[in-house]
Image (tube, rainbow, N blue to C red; front, top):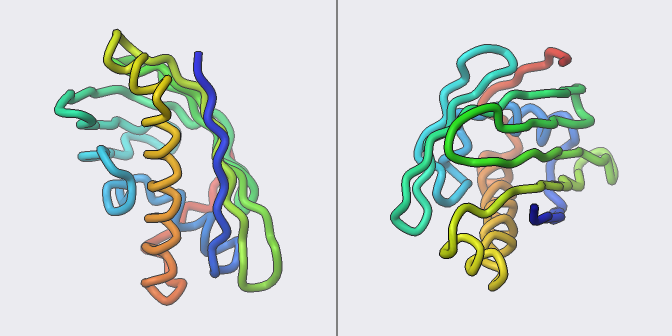
Length: 150
């Protein structure tokens, strides 16, 4: 298993950052390689990714969700093995630190080499930067919200 820990500060309130992060079907707007996400139930999402020309499909189950604090997940079937948590930290009324921690298992030689060369870490850093640009470019208006707790 490999691990990634990345964070970014966004110029929106914690509620706004959290609300946007719960809009999984919008992830393709800022996550490189994510083709599509379907929210199947309150706790189950179906992902289609294409990274380096390789398409993968998998389901992820939300294992914990606390409004304005955290969203945790693990894959439950499909072609990817990963688990992680995103936490939201209030810096002040208008700024939030978004922290991502993820464990994942590279599949095959190409992914293992890519992992060792830091490809996944760089991709995650880029995804968080694009999240920041996405939410801030909207004037701090999230595309929706799910305030339920898991």
